[in-house]
Length: 320
Image (cartoon, rainbow, N blue to C red; front, side, top):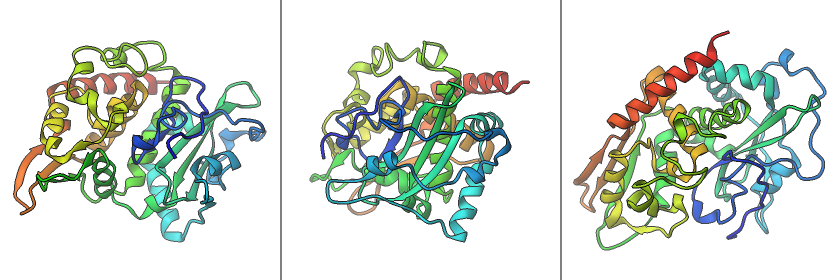
């Protein structure tokens, strides 16, 4: 499963991957997928429909995207407890995100596909008015996962076991992973709708194009991770990689995948940290449990400066 379906149409990342090792094609991490043959129609007035009511069974194309050769993704039926998690995640979105989703989100779906390397997928297509509509699809097993466990598992796939005995842990507290995932995916919708990163701007300064890092980032450790489509590294290299992250403008290693992922990660962590007090600490321990290194990427001066830019942008866009 080295190649995923190619649905690309433009410069917006469509999903969060458990591992970009599984994403040689840009169908998942490159652009929101326009529906291939029979796009769903949104003839109803979305402005009169609550975001909760947009939770619907996944479109066939989304099910196919999460399916394997011998494993078929299925529609996930939400329990009462899971409905509460979904409603909480929707309520946690910033005002601008809710406003854009109210106008442009056609469907929010959950699927059973625990084997899939993709965690969440955002798809884009033309609505009846000619303007873009979006569908967000999320793997259902994420509903039972904390953000700390989700991030730890995702970054663990960047490394291979070696004699160092190192293990990594990303600590973001007990916040549900869904709140972060919906923030991230909704930011893609905001970005695509308002064309924030499409044509330059202050959040493209560290990128020469949508996927290419600017110097000197293009030659450092951050350019050599799985998220940059490079092989997994030995765990002994983890301290060097995370040290480079802590000294960079990025909030996470996943931010280095593309300009769209960079912006989505920045806004998601801006909201989590500033509105909900969620921190992010990266621990590296040896086989005896001793701390080898600790990093707090959100404390970076350059990250804080970019978050200030994000605050200014969101305040401007949220004004009537």
